[in-house]
Length: 253
Image (cartoon, rainbow, N blue to C red):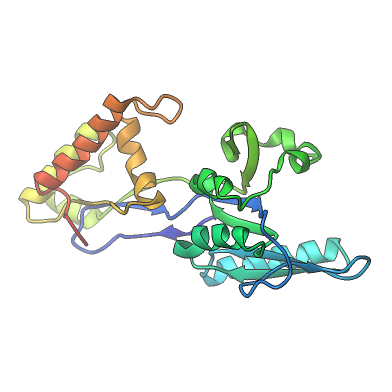
């Protein structure tokens, strides 16, 4: 689960639009009564509350989380789902600190790229037992199952795509067709720069958003997480750096 941040702006020929984070669902290993951020509480034989932490703030996302809560409550009489918003940039630290304090949520929606960090911080419980009894487990591709040292800690609810947006009016003005290859992209950026435009904008944040946007340029040089070749990674990053040095990509927004 995640949000889409569009950074398309007037005067920029091409803008990379990325998903802010690849969200996954995980069981928290830190829940108990008494958390000030939203904790689980249950009484034997009585009503139960399941606390879910998430980082969604857009109205449609919040509405979807509320709908999921209602569906679960309808299917499990006596259970209340408490959705608690936690800012995206605070999620990891809050999860790890709540694990140490034995407080926190029962379920968490978080950035899948952070699975190892959160799991090794003791904030996630293994999911293998639950997954093995899930009747549709066989339909889940391996790419959405996140493991650490062979143990499953999270499963993605869905996956997203990365797209390249462009300003059609500007491309028409400078006589450029939408690029379909890296070479065509670089030629288009150079022509846009010569015409006085700012070229392509990318996220260079030192987090998963920056990683997500960098991935196409890394894979274009042969890099993959299954085969993390340092030479390929250096080539991909050097290519992007050359865009900045040539003035085809601004240093800041």
